[in-house]
Length: 287
Ligand code: PDD
Image 1 (cartoon, helix red, strand yellow):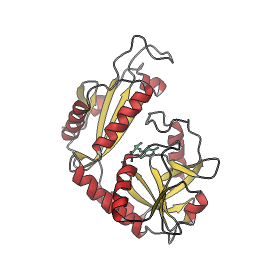
Image 2 (cartoon, rainbow, N blue to C red):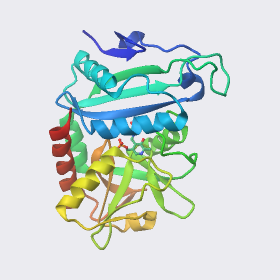
Image 3 (tube, helix red, strand yellow):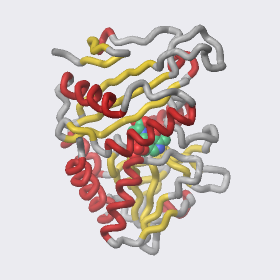
């Protein structure tokens, strides 16, 4: 059995999986998504991602396509059918299919639902974390509702491409005040010169990262000094350590910002420890 995807009630061959040309996700980016890291075939941080999914859908007035329990069953079935042990599972919910018109369709149409899954080579991902990655900085140019996890990701796409062309793995958006908002697909953190862990608060126009939230809980247990406060690019460059968090990156040390080294230019002890802590907690609580 090859790769399969779930599309609107059916499992189909991944190569044949398709939505209608007038799906509003396709034409208008009128949809939201979630990504879960998967360990041992089970979804990490499941409740946090479901809570954010419901919130994103609510903000856009798209109904939940099925209950959380039903979504969870189908997501796990997607993992099973693709024989995923360690990897990721992706869920997208669009407003539905209707003749193209910017305003919502009337009467409302059923939301469309797509799920895909892929394997991740954990050894390769550990090797990357052991080396650390580079980030580039780009001007913040996104809309004012980055708290909603929509598929309208063009600024993130362009930022990530800038990173890739510079040999970096992530791009950090920087606002008019010179403060880092977040990464194109991750949240941004530093260990500042005073040894304090810092990441910006989620009242700002950023995604409320689920990995970030879990890590905050773990940090509270370690007793490490922590402050929810934004940092400038300059502070990040002069910090002891930097790292990013997300369902894709987990906790990933950043050793270069725009080609200047962070700290000693190698992953620091705090990021390494938090990566281990996060992965063991994510494995322990995966469902
Ligand atoms: N991205 N910020 C942005 C803009 C993101 O797209 C993501 C996740 C995060 C981290 O959120 P979380 O910890 O809940 O994964 C922060 C996913 C992985 C993606 O787009 O593939």
